[in-house]
Image 1 (cartoon, rainbow, N blue to C red):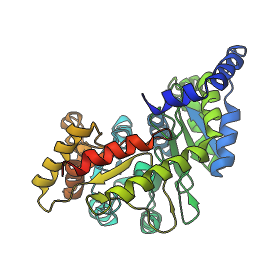
Image 2: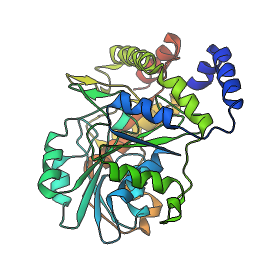
Image 3: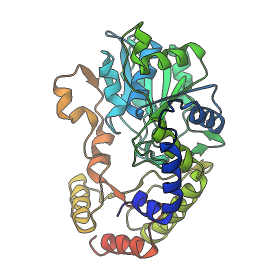
Image 4: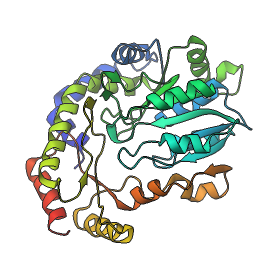
Amino acid sequence: MTGWDRDYLANKDEYLKLFDNVMQKENERNVEFLEKKIQKLINRKYVVACASGTDALQYALMAYGIKPGDEVLVTNFSWISSASCVAMNGATTVFCDVDLETNHMSIDSIKRMYSDKVKAIVYPHLFGSMSDVTEILKFCKEKNIAFVEDAAQAIGSSLNGIKAGTLGEFSTISFNANKTIGGIAGGGVVLTDNKDHADMCIKLRKHGNHEILGYNSKMLFFNAKFIDYRLKKLNQYIEAKQAIAKKYDEQLDGYVYVHKPTNGLNHTYHKYIIRFDEGDPVESSEARDRIKSKIGAGVHYEKPISERPMYKNIEHRSDNCKNAKYVSKTILTLPIHPWLTDEEIKDTCNGILNNL
């Protein structure tokens, strides 16, 4: 049973009341109430709701004017949307390696892969964590390139008081069902402080207002109401996941690599990850796969994006990305949602420790 299944059963009367309320307003189409709520929560001037986090990334690049002939720097270790949005705009994808400690884009790799054709960086905060991007932002300013912050997995996260979703010329958030705040039918938002950029995203999500080519990417009113309901419990969800992560840390630290939050990081644990560092990469990978089969855990992500079959036919450049390759072969994602029980946590930890 998934976390949202348990949430529904625990709060069934509230959900049914919400459903009844929405169905009595079935002709309602306006989702501005949710945009305003997120605008206040994240502290951005403009928020544009759309059908998915993937659409949000694509519209951000389109609004900035990314086009064929341009290049965009992306990570080689993330969900595929962090990179596919570039190709969808006809630009060339440039894959960068990650830092082994953070799993986030490496500034050294960014500098290696930069060219005069680069117009933007798409930077995801993975797993609900954040890293210090001061150097990367400075580099973007020096080179006059856009910093597009992919905060799909990081709503509620912050580093030294700086919230995820506030750092980019564009920022995006996803409400896919597997996120800390999941919609009934996915959903996403673009955040920006530039009115022209916001207006373009609004135009793009609704067939371009018949002025330019656009898309049908409206967020359903029904979905917006459910996201709004769950947003009211954001802190509750985060605190529950942080408590679970602490229990994993206590039982697993010293046996496998656990990603502990740095000072000043409010880690929201979209995913809880461990890594098997056995010294030899082959042995590490074998240990990961052996334990994965025993406990039914997930792998995020099992290979670098550039190694996906689609990139055989998509124009791209890539750094060596040895770290991204290593992490993808040794990382394991453990169950984490607010309704996980102590017994389930213990069973997962025992399944790992008994099979090392």
